[in-house]
Image 1: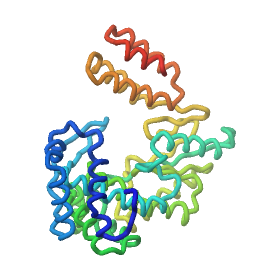
Image 2: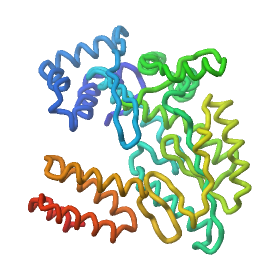
Image 3: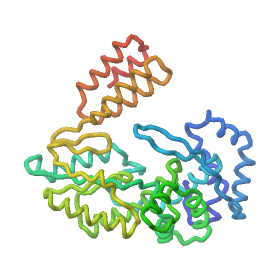
Image 4: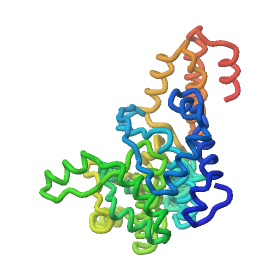
Length: 360
């Protein structure tokens, strides 16, 4: 949204809806539902604007399915018109909230991402260890079923701190209330607690910014209340680094209590880990060690397996470039050579793929 503004009427201007459509359409032009919407594009967008203006807009149902990337995730896909609204609101919320986030929040932000997060972790480790001459410990934590556990009331109250326009809040509520996590309700019932509106869907673009807004409360607490200097977060995975292991133990109980009291979340009890730097710190599919950044062993095995399965397929080259790009961000010269040898030795590689390999 180039011409950012704060009023509801400006937000739902037809120019912004066309821009949201354009952003949504990228990479999806061959999909049937997108093509069907595009056949009557102007009518559809003007009708959508009319429903927003009259406040008759209601978010539709979700299509539910599972993906493995590599662990299984439950995805909920909205219809095209709803996803255009997601893009519209994402742009608006990003403009307002991104400037309030800490520097070391790396998920779904411009100029950030997994590779920047891993490099930042390596920089922190080098500083704490005084160029690898002293101890460095990493407390790695994960929130249990984060997306399914986001409390709607808490999220809305956080949004209201920055957004005062009642009509915009109404539209945001339409998105938030369009999804309720069944697993969160079952979990609450088992613990003898009253059920509440919880969950944001994996699949909504808005869920990415909602997650950062929600967990920014944790970031601010860690940085400004606990005064932790070396902390970083990617989505619901976060790490605290310290030269003293006992400090890491103390942070665990403090953070667990904060998440429970302020955000109604739980730490995953099986994913609380304290690692010494020379053992390797596992973060975002890489292992950070003194002097080295390496890919995870499971990831290496998956790369070779997936490429073997895709040899000869139409999307082989795309997968190959993706994996080589991943390896490029770590100390993987020997592994990259092994991968090239496997691909070249398969006898099913064309000149384009061979050129791709030589460029790495």
